[in-house]
Image (cartoon, rainbow, N blue to C red; front, top):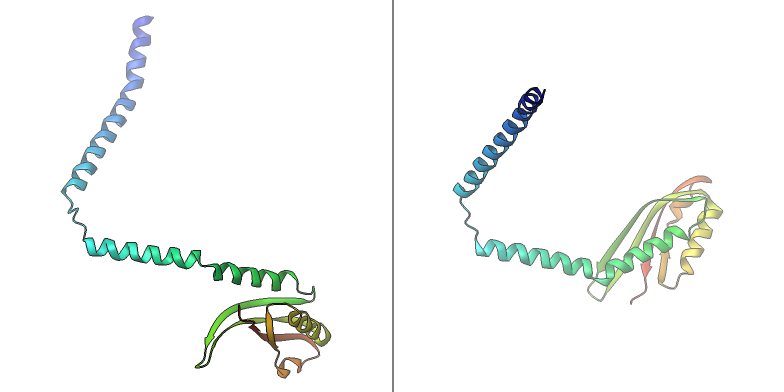
Length: 155
């Protein structure tokens, strides 16, 4: 009985042994392939890559991005229920005299009164210098597609 159990155990271990041997052979082949490949790294290329990574890190660390996120959050969270905002964009406009920031809002309003109330709400914000709501947005009585440009105060 013991001999039969040992024989069955050996027979069952053979596939596991073959699989392990095959895995070892594949690992050795991959190691040899990697050793044969040219491992030359250009120092200028590494320097340029590090420079780009640092530049991106500085951009992400810039407080203006956090500020823009806070502005967008304030506008979208404090809007009226019958206003649907479909797009927000932030622009930095440069003229010969100055630089100013502008937020563009695109959306849909239930009716004219709601759109006017939304405009008044935006004008009350402390960071808003000017709200430009074109008259053409009032061509319809209901289900109004609108676009608003907000000029931000200088910070």
